[in-house]
Length: 234
Ligand SMILES: C[S@@+](CC[C@H](N)C(=O)[O-])C[C@H]1O[C@@H](n2cnc3c(N)ncnc32)[C@H](O)[C@@H]1O
Image 1 (tube, rainbow, N blue to C red):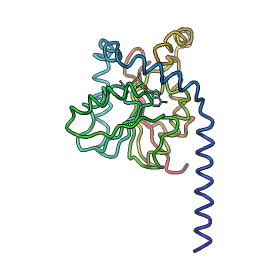
Image 2 (cartoon, rainbow, N blue to C red; image 1 turned 45 degrees about the vertical axis):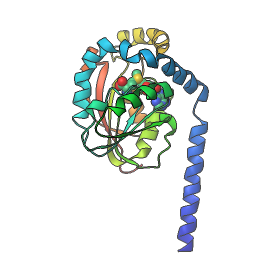
Image 3 (tube, rainbow, N blue to C red; image 1 turned 120 degrees about the horizontal axis):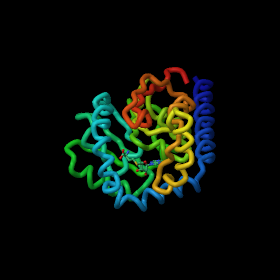
Image 4 (spheres, rainbow, N blue to C red; image 1 turned 135 degrees about the vertical axis):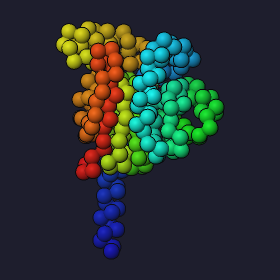
């Protein structure tokens, strides 16, 4: 019995040390630059996205129609554009690293019938214990998380084994010429927040998630809805 307790203690302290090392590896400066960028655009974000949102709304509906009413983590909630689509009766938690974006999300959340817990948090270092959620969702987030693979690894850690992660993300076009144009435009687009040339499907796999389903939503396959699963064996 004592030996088992000692092993458990050794394992827990090793996993804490690994977690601390993972956080140490996060590029804090790059994260701060991006966070400030979102803080700056927060007051204008909904206005900037007004036209885009007409196209995105049906995609959001399609994604959320697949999310069961379980314990769900929404990563990078922004101003709360997904809140009205949250499944009724779900236990919703939302995180975002930008306090200004969260201010808007909080105002939005106050109008909702179902409560949502909102926390300021970096997706690259999620402050919830392992397997805290049954599912997770992110829409247009992993284009701007400084280290997307680390962010996806963290989402994988906090979702229980077998749980699903639903992503609506834009990514680099598979056509090499269009992809190259996106590479050239990325530094300019980054000034407003996202990188438009991320190879997000590769990043999802690199984080150790299993891709179950990918659907092209629009813009010639730039926007995709991806359903990934946390493997049972890590
Ligand atoms: C393009 S906005 C999308 C917001 C919302 N998901 C939507 O669909 O309208 C990206 C959001 O991700 C957040 N974000 C980016 N990197 C993050 C990180 N490392 N941790 C937490 N939130 C992050 C930004 O603050 C911003 O609110």
